[in-house]
Image (cartoon, rainbow, N blue to C red; front, side, top):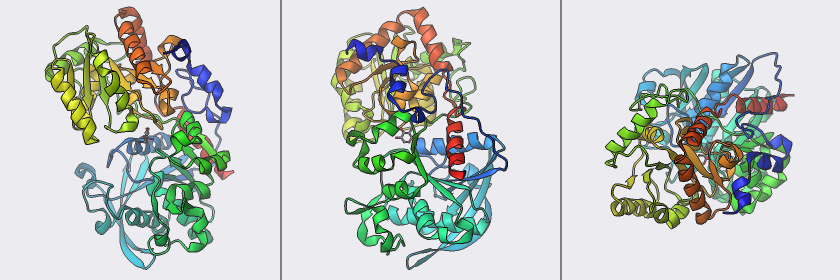
Length: 514
Ligand code: GLC
């Protein structure tokens, strides 16, 4: 790796970006002062999303919906509500307390479908769960042949529910392609009705890879959108719902300042870069946060022992117990490098495959937790068989175990090829597992290089040997106890909460309402 790569600090990145895009925690650990907000009346914000933690979660989207809505609702300036489908898998512990508000019927082209609504309040946020057993009484959230129809029903249901419950938001904030149609319905159908005419729409891209692409033939018949509006949604001779939402929202955002830059480039955009560039004037990049109460090593009941940045004794116990549990030799001075990830290519697993055996020549232990593509599952299972006592691969996902790994590990590897934001590097830092990341998307905006006084280790180019170089650098630093202690402290005390980023969302909403 070049000197330049090693020394490239956060400041240098920030200077690369236009001032308006450098939002969120780009300047860790001291965030830029948030803009002044002065609002007279409570503003009504409605989140529309296909998942929301803690009720139903398959990934980072759910966590953001749960934690951002809670952060906004903490201020009494906002009435924050969230609409999600009532999936079969919504956790029973919550479901039993849902209150049935009633039902209406939702028109979807020639279809007329039942839509029930349940309400639940938590942390000052009102959640609505839209019910239709034909569409949502199935295991999991996605992956069905009729996902387009399922989420069209959901989005149309959202629009109807506003009328049913008498809540017309000032801002409807739609997340990812599954919610894109709500923005399209607003702008093509509902905005002609008086109650809906002042609703502003914004759209957040959590991952540009999934755009909601369908054949143009079903625009009217399935989505119920007139061919007069075909130009709004058409892209590459297909319906592209993400493109449609970008075109018709008053503003759109993505989940880190760097990713907001990257998606203008074909390397990252999955074909949408011309649309992103054309609509750049209304694009923002706002770094995600995590809920610091939910991820707190001082109170986390999954941990073998609790600890905090100021009292680290428990972390050594967590490491020892993790080694014991995973049948690794109990060695307090051997660094554990962990990965908790979906096993898919864009997570940088080909880099890991290329150099992990070289890294393993030194005294270290490697722990991987995740599921995904079978080729990676087979590769990592085999690696563990070939390196007993050094490598453990757990091909599953389990939140309790993930927390035990975050707390027991010393280093956390996340070499993604692309990463809109990424939450794991923030969680690992909070648990004192210092992150090693590639400088892309939110990884670049949240982890700053050790050499520049930062909170982790980074490499710039998507190159296995650059990654190996920083892994070795990290292990070197690990063996200098005083320096390591300070680094772990910096990682654990970096502010990854929503405190600063939520203000940038507020600023975005208020900008729309002017
Ligand atoms: C998606 C992205 C991830 C991001 C999350 C929440 O899952 O892949 O990088 O952190 O959404 O915005």
